[in-house]
Amino acid sequence: MNRPEEYTAGAGESGQGFKIQVTAGANQPQGVPGRKLTLICEGGGQRGIFTAGILDSFMRQKFFPFHALLGASAGAQNLASYACDQMGYARDVILGYTTSKKFYDPFRFARGGHLVDLDWYFDAINLEMPLNLEYGMQRLSGREFHMCASRCDTLEADYLSFHSSDIYQSIKASCALPLLYRQPVVIDGVAYWDGGVADSLPVKAAHNRGSDCMVVIRSQPFESINPLAMLHRNWRLKGLQRMGSLVESYVKNYNAAMAFIKHPPGGAKVIDIAPAKPLKSRLLGSSLEVLRHDYQLGQLCGNEFMENHAWRL
Picture 1: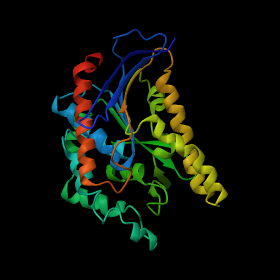
Picture 2: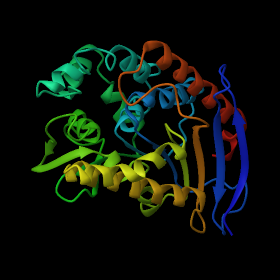
Picture 3: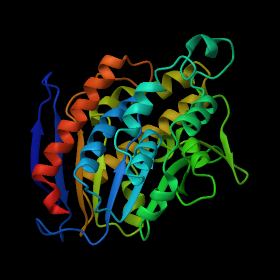
């Protein structure tokens, strides 16, 4: 029988709070660490600053027990900074670059350009705030790191390796929000959209790769996606079938992942970390004030995890 082992909740200054839930399959005893530990990070655009706060707490305490890392979109970016042990990197990128008009510009989008200019974004951070990739490769020796991207032709997930020849292009493919970034990212002849479309919470992929203990960091409560469940039908009525298909794929895969998290198969364990309520930050267009708030909430959550849950791993 699948069962929650432990449930804790904490509160930030606003009382917004976070939740940490541990569930285990029928054959997974309490307190037993996994043989293969995987850290999984959801995307969510600027909401990823909550994840950045958690991972900075991990890095501050030199906590890196995972055999594999797996993420989509902003989750992949956060994991890249974690893999390279660059505390504060993801926070500074979100605060300094995703709030720039060069990155997010609705007026440019109305004129036929990108709503989010990933070309400028990756060129700028590569030049001004590059990842320490050489150290990251050394730190990942013997470990796996894959970034989820969605194939445009089938809307199925591909898991691109951090050890690829062009890491930034792989991260970019994982972050290419459909339609908001006007063209897909092409790698080896395959066109990709944002990984969240096909597998925003790649828990099943981690389990299929041999993981028996998964720590999942989400950037939104499960209830937040419920209103999306009906949107694709409205878009279909308005003739926007492609957008409807993308949203339908996202909702379907997210629901399947949450079912896995709540009821893992026998022998598997999941530690699910998420905000208790929707974060103050949004996918795009968040203010510096709310981004800093959600980062601090992430740090509180990370500290709570380290104090009361890290021993499990």
